[in-house]
Length: 205
Image (tube, rainbow, N blue to C red; front, side, top):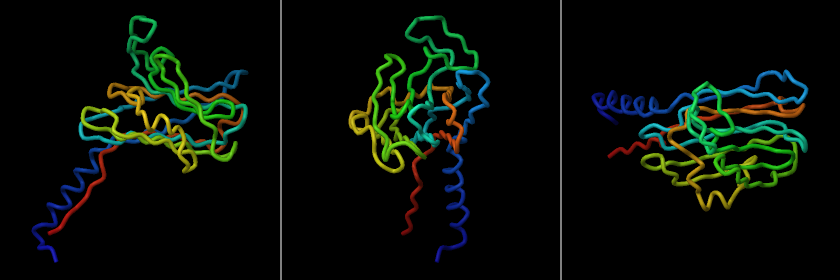
């Protein structure tokens, strides 16, 4: 049985560890206003801080052969590939997006924003209710140690998990853009992103 004097120290360490996690971001698509059915929202997002090791985001919605949903991460105010002078205006322009992940007309995709190079993957079990979870484990300085893509629990994008390209995360990202296109993108949708520390382990001797 632990002596009472050790209990406050244990609780204090546990609370400090939990406090390191950044608040989760849960963007919501606004109502469609135009005939092209496109809806867009931009929200602030902090991609990395010292001692934070896990970058996780999720897309959950009813996937169809015709709709499109994507989450883009980048730096608002960054000079993109066109070399246009940076302007921080609260939104991510296509030129400011470094990573775009989503669903496009029947398939998942992961796109490097700087080059437009896109990798696609067939959904697990066809269209319907899907949740894509992307988990990136970070090392010191924000470098990528490991990455996993899960579609309803099944691994996808194995080639990206193996190669771990550096453009899957950047410590300077400050904005997340969510885009939806199609009549069914708002059916049961859930979107989430967060950066958290490593799990805490406790040893007793």
